Length: 404
Image (cartoon, rainbow, N blue to C red; front, side, top):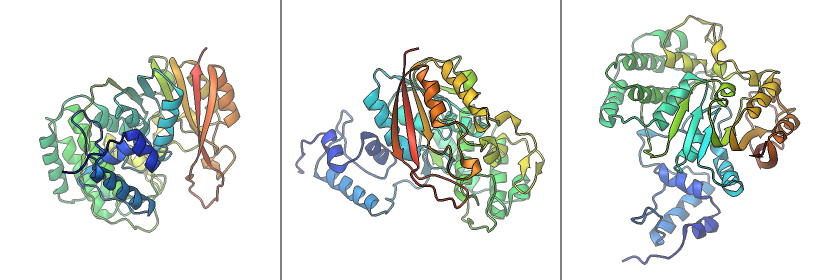
């Protein structure tokens, strides 16, 4: 019988230099197997420690450990401008070490939803919001509480994978542009198939649409957004639809789909997390392909980028010169014990469209009107569309203890 080592998780975390959230992510997504006791706590025997040690060695060598289930996907498995997947440990640490009594967290510009998922996985109550239809659908999938028929949905996904590839709206408009011709045909057929599933619940349909969206992202002929497609079609791997990894939690989840400045006038939370689109890139524009396929209204498309003519409903003031005024209005009307703001020091760096529309000084000045401000920073690799070499890029977190 293997001898159980009486080590505590905090000792293991210190030994390997990782956070509790990192360990949870590694074990949650099937890449790392650690034994657990009947009460759910980690069991640190020799086998568990060796397993973790081997995993850390692979990561250090730049080798991606292989997961156990290749037919599922997680909420962070997509490309997205400004996604905070690599900042989760940083965010988690700042909140854990500098706040108290935080039970409800509102993520009001949620994007991919990975920050919401960080706290949702910890059993906290969450409020999640975004203006894009495609993101709202993803939240219903991963954070919705309605029961779903998993076996039925997996059968539907198998049927989607077996669909023929006939010409359709997607292949005519996006084939040999954003997707290979064969993948575009399959995407259009799958979307039409989902629309015909009239006996599914709303969340069940959203799960199929989420499967479609994540599969599209994997085979898109882009750099991670849809402002343009690559001139050379270099992503021709056949599209494959998968089932999402869903967590069942007893915590309260509220999902919204509206302007954040209006939403904060209606909600209360212990902590409100803000990650606005600070630069001139309108997210409704750069993700127009996903929005179009999810909405399935089949509008006429224009220009080289094949965009719908009317994209006004997703326009954000935070991507314009009015960003400082919008931010002040937002912060003024927040009802919370803490406000946590993500920002990066791109105000005067990079190319024009990547530059922030609101400065560090403006953010601090506005936040100080609500209470005591602490600033935390972390080095971060920036995204730009050009070849600009940007040095000393940092991701910043501003934490406000609200007093006013």
